[in-house]
Image 1 (tube, protein in one colour):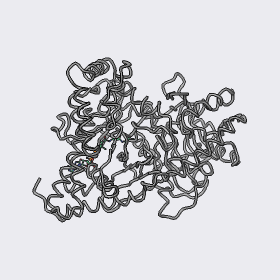
Image 2 (cartoon, helix red, strand yellow):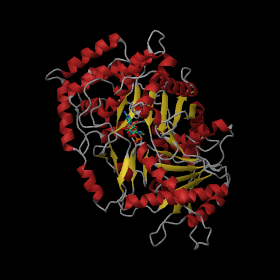
Image 3 (spheres, protein in one colour):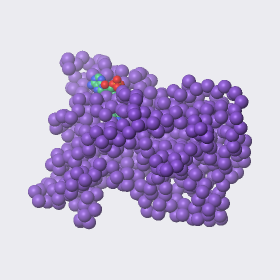
Image 4 (cartoon, protein in one colour):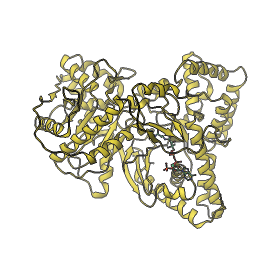
Length: 638
Ligand code: COA
């Protein structure tokens, strides 16, 4: 099995001076709410381009990053390789120059490579391995009628957000006073991933000459085209949407249809092959094209297995991440679709999104808007002018396709069985406590994760945290390497009875500051992972013998992220979730609110060494113990 080493994954920690470009940066905050058409391009053009960091800086920082995660002799060997790599006139310098030329000639030297390597060349199923789920707060309904009414409001809310995209009136977002690239917002609607035999692609129909006016709705694994605009161009209102959704539900009551959508859960090579035979049939091709072109997909789900109240959130996360298996809702999806909203009959709701076009924050901003909209929106049940019946999408399922569907069902069920996913609400405190102690909340949480991991395994591990590169034109992400020499010293000292509390507090302070320093470096384009990737890609483009630094054991260790983490903040009390990126690792996504923190922790059951509930508990304990330490130990005035 090939594992993804890049996405939501790849960097190091060093203690050089803080990056000059940034003050401590803050949450993304929308400021200006108006935009005249055309201003989008002007805004984009005004953004700086992603820099190529100096070669020596990356080499030095890479070695520092390896310190807490490799053995002494491995580090010694890698140090020699790095010296050879960066010596004057060596291969490193040559690649660096090529990279600088590329940066000069493109809008963003990294983004295209990144999307290819991290997403489109990635051959494991997108479900669990790449596409995140998002769990929204449970809504107060418990039947089909409630499901339809909420779905109608949600669709109207997304269309309202789409109006801002279409009119280019989306508020520009800022990070630490710097405007951010808004391109990802223009990539998430009317787009879809297309499987290929060796590499996938993404199509975006938003800018086509006739932009799509429909969404797709899937119910009992049957797909429908729902036109969401009236002939005068106005979006259907919630009453109209309710009527249309009712028609869809009453004409798709059969539950034994072939779930063609389950094919999108296959590994990408197999799906690419099946896709080519599926679309040989004209009807199938038209149906698939309608799904791909649609603005987004709404999945009206059936039941999920009954669980106790304390497991409701975790069960909802399973529903959003993969649907629970073929006997539940995994076939009620088209996982290639960039944006799928998922609504159960029991008030459960959320989303799943295909990662290639965007990161979590733009998706969550859209969803924050939709959630607010659904709260205000009313269904009046006033009579509506008759609308045409939504068109059902038909599939001709040949015996070969049927076989592939059966195989996809089995594989999906095995994967569903394998995923161990726990959502926990840490309700003792949120961002408020670290702020009181003048510490970055994100850094505090990351250091707690390091402590939790160390307590379970007695060592630090390569840890990935996503850092936004959206301060640059077409920027995506780089990696914050949360395991640093400073965090390693702190976690080793924490449970050591020979250490004084004052020393522990000092080490905690240093670990938090090291993390914040790395964050500032990463978001200002000076982290190491994407730079190293760029040098490697450049060597491949120039067909050079791969430099030994990239075939070195330390590099593999550095990219084997046993902890793959991401902060996805939101106004709504929700949490995103994703799978681990290596078989023996954890995926940890968190949403720090002011006075509580939502966590989603995942691992694989087939790995005996990992356990999502145990890590979740260890993180809770670490957060509480760190607070106690701070409260019990007076600190010198900072
Ligand atoms: N003392 C007091 N308050 C502090 C502080 C300190 N030393 N440092 C930070 N804070 C405050 C900030 O002012 C901010 O306040 P707010 O809640 O009023 O906005 C808050 O604490 C949060 O700051 P912090 O915890 O440091 O994190 P951040 O908001 O700067 O986020 C990242 C850090 C890495 C998450 C962010 O830069 C980023 O890159 N996000 C994108 C991640 C991404 O793409 N994820 C999705 C992948 S799919």
